[in-house]
Length: 449
Ligand code: NDP
Image (cartoon, rainbow, N blue to C red; front, side, top):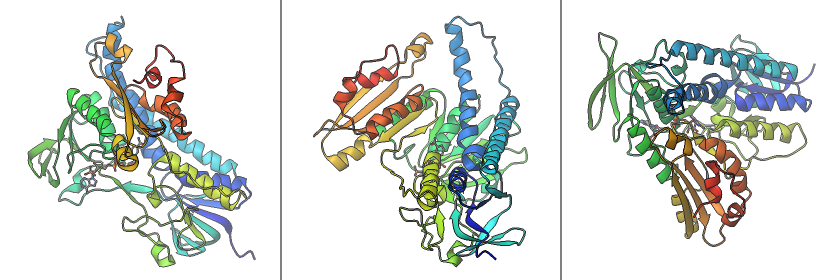
């Protein structure tokens, strides 16, 4: 009898787990993957994908208004139906869920749709009680929303539930001021919900370039989103009429219809049997791994959000790919974490790569900063007054572009291409030597003074 049932057993069929399973199988490994919820993970099922579709849906609020300035006869009032968008988005999620399952299937990966826990360095126990043995185990269980433990927190929802709302709330309070909070603040505001965003500190999107996030704050306020800072949750009380009374530090109570917690995400390591098997877990609950994704136990590896390195889908995918290529593909590969572009799909969106101005000043000492503060051509005709802001941060000693940060229409689309140049270590002169593509917003990048 073979010593192991599988070469590789993957726990968690999200972005990182699916990539690792599929590529390992393509390299010839006998692979099984366990998933307790739905194949696809956070990004596909309750994150990036459905969120981006809601962002598109929300943007029509402005597009339809602007269309009148471009000669289109758009009826007033122009109504939005949440249930139509929600159901269409959820069916697209179903389609992707099936496509992910088919990919695993076509690569010969055995799918086990139940919860799996680690019961030894080479053993996994399934919810049904069956145990299987694998030469290697890969933990790819992702992360889940973290909710501050205040009285009545159970009356709030998280990004897991927000895609399934029966109806749009008239008033929503969003807790947190990071990615999810700002993205959903924009979405709900465009749908006509009164949005209040509260945060314990006095900044939004800590870690992003200061002038870019200040611009988002200013535009969001102009669009009607309220912000409350230095506000920590005291509690949520459900009233007789179903409304929620929220109390917080430093501010008056608020009555709303929905509370959305967007206060960070914690790695899914609880109850997985990891510590018992000898896997080291850090203070935040993440699996500690080395540069080759290996945990403290030689046969157990981890990729993606469960390791809490960079909580982004494309990073988890790269980690899964690197794991498979290194272990089963005969091609040792490590993920390069330098210059990872990221975006916030707020209204308008923002995106950045490399060092912020503040980081560059601290790390390099002498920096040169170039900005373009402009109104997009389309916004001028639409009589829309918000301004885009692009910022290029250069190392003053050699002109190298070390950071690029932007807010404005299509910023993530533009930044992805420009990130190639930043990653490649190009200089401001290289940008200047490129002829502008006119008229476009992206041309500002080669015209910075
Ligand atoms: P973020 O880490 O972006 O932001 C968390 C926010 O919650 C911060 O404003 C933070 O405040 C606040 N906060 C944290 N802990 C508490 C607490 N105990 N009580 C009150 N407030 C708290 O988390 P998100 O939940 O928005 O997103 C999680 C991760 O998912 C992101 O970091 C990102 O990696 C990923 N993501 C990426 C997206 C994208 O690429 N577009 C979209 C959505 C998510 P403070 O400012 O004080 O720290």
